[in-house]
Image 1 (cartoon, rainbow, N blue to C red):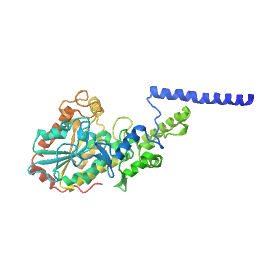
Image 2: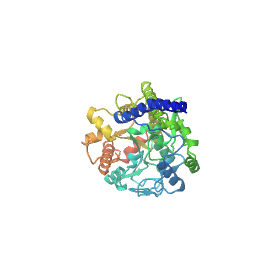
Image 3: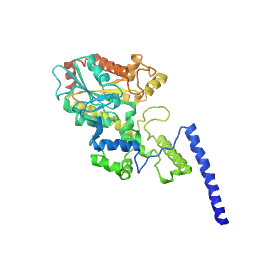
Image 4: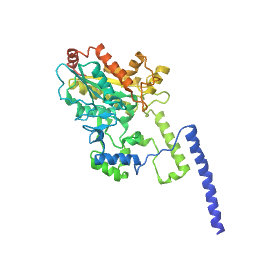
Length: 415
């Protein structure tokens, strides 16, 4: 009995000697370095993700729905909070024929939540404000919250090209580059418990990995047996590899601390080997990263396909509040390498950071962004103004001029 008691005491002392310092280490990391143990689950979904997925499966969502090709899309005749969509799932109250009306200039916009215009009413989107500013313009909103450039490209290819637009606006916000190497949305950001297609580059060609959850039945299997899917999603997901994985040993502070130190070292290794999306010293794109290479290749494919389909492509670069602050502080643009690439290719683009600067708009303007960092109605007004100014400066409010540019041969070299 004494020997057993002595053994238990020794074990408790050893455990305390290891675990107590580890527990204190975790507290210090959280307080001083703001580093917290936040593992990826390989066997379960969060309750919020389960609830959202269940609604998608049984058809109780009123705005976003599952898409076999795109991952998710907007429901035809959908509605939610401030948003309404028409009968083909475009944000807006108007219906559109496949051919534009005579003498109107049809513009279609593709992109993420900055193109969709999250957090404002339909009439406060920059598309509506652009259309109201010049009644010759007919502006269609194909934007979808949470989209990457890959999904925007696929939506154009699958749906948008059918609408014979004179001008195609390709919206891109600086953070969007991270979405190009993500497969299962919750591995990267919260909110949409679905997978998306993603591209790889093989022998300088884009290779598409289709959406893993291609049917609602797949979504149902994910809901009821997530363990069968999550690790498979992670095989092609950049963010899955950056974070620790949940395990039954996580009750131990020393295990959690070891995992944090391991992944911290691994992430530092990625940075030193030039494989992270951003450069470490300043917030700017790493041109050697897989994400940047996919991004530029996708812009090539998108731009060329639009030209091939006899439309005029124009890229819209959306800065977030942090981009504006950084630019005003040190005149550095986090996406400057992308701008250099566009210049080298001769691509048309509108850098809204320059436009906001020209209009005297700063990130400190309380009315420019809403609480979730999307543009407010006033912010969307500035976006519409910048686009209209660009169109007028280049005579793209003249159908004859647009058609002259469209008839020029597209660039075939996308290498």
